[in-house]
Amino acid sequence: MKLISGPLSLYTAKVRIALREKGVPCDLWSVPFCRATGYDPKPADVLRLHPKGQVPILVDGELVVYDSTQILEYLEERNPEPPLYPSGVTERARCREVEAYPDEVFFPKVFALVQEVFYKADPAAHDADRIAEAQRVIGEDYDRFERRLAGREWFCPTFSVADIAVFMSINYASTLGCPPPEKHRSLAAWLARTAKRPSVAEEMRQISADAARVFGGETLPEGPRAL
Ligand SMILES: N[C@@H](CCC(=O)N[C@@H](CS)C(=O)NCC(=O)O)C(=O)O
Picture 1: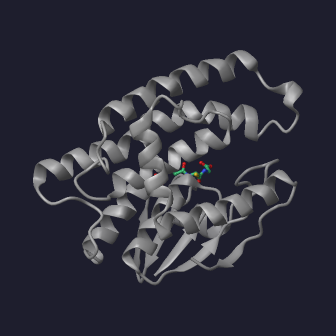
Picture 2: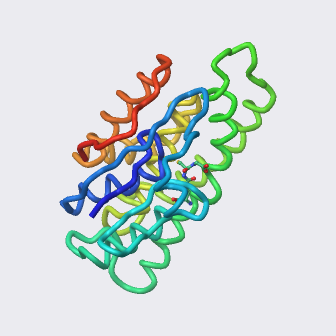
């Protein structure tokens, strides 16, 4: 199995964490990435295999699966143990809803910070009003995550793809200067708990190292990487 992987891609990070949790061997092929042009120019395989030219893409023999959520579903069916979805139709539906929220609703708000803070290297070029508005709407979602957790250990009865997706999105918002407020005690405890999982700790280690290189002006090269 091969994962075409974005080094700083939060969507790919979800898949990398799931692969580690499940102990599934997988070759990683990292696409190039830099601060000036992001994912451009894209490798030919990405353009050929994904209709939107995005990562992650999972290739398993003849099968190509794209979109992080679809890949997580595929991995769960291919390698059910340990499960990353709860059992029972209702809990699974709840899990899918929590997993989808950061990708579909929360991260688009964070993306304003990506465009302002990450892609504009000169702080003088940052649009302060846009950043403030992004921080306001992100704060509303932090309230929502806190209410949803309400002191529970995980978003679902057991650690799941919901925790992975929410954690990665919050990590990006935090890195871009908008961490959850201290008043959200459930969220803080859950973040610390999640960060301690070896699968997540390894992801954070790799992403921090890659981010430091990219902020230093390097282009992360295309090629094989260790999971
Ligand atoms: N819904 C997709 C989103 C994938 C996505 O937006 N990938 C980004 C990297 S994080 C990408 O490839 N961006 C390049 C582009 O859209 O041109 C998923 O969950 O996989």
